[in-house]
Length: 205
Image: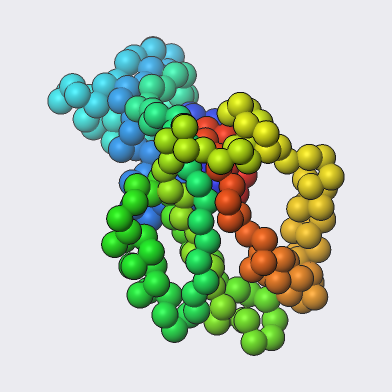
């Protein structure tokens, strides 16, 4: 899944997009079938499980819309489960080892994991890093700060959204803004948040 939630299914299939999770394949691996309009105006259905569709299937997934007009697609879907965000410190020197122990060798079910290295000026530049993983939790174990759309009590307020946007915008082409943003993320981050796989708040992070 991509980091943003404003992409169309057809557009995503046409460029064979991928998400942040290094253990997950691109979207083509989830496509089961699609209906499309060919250049001659005819409408056809293409299925992954039909051998005679394999050539067209491969041309459509990642074809950037050069051969067809996409009409309708069907992809496999994952269950809408709950995850708790956990963050860990790392450095450029120990990043690979930290990621391997925190993610690859983890004894918990991880739905998403990613790492970022600091581009803030000063001693943190290309040295300090953060690793975030989303660990699956059962519904009855979800903390009270589960986002509102999942029946919890936690919701991002308009003020919090405005503040996050201001911090992000301030970091664009601004050394002090980058430094301030990384300092805030080191302290606050996403620790203790419980979100659903389909949560808008989850997709935006």
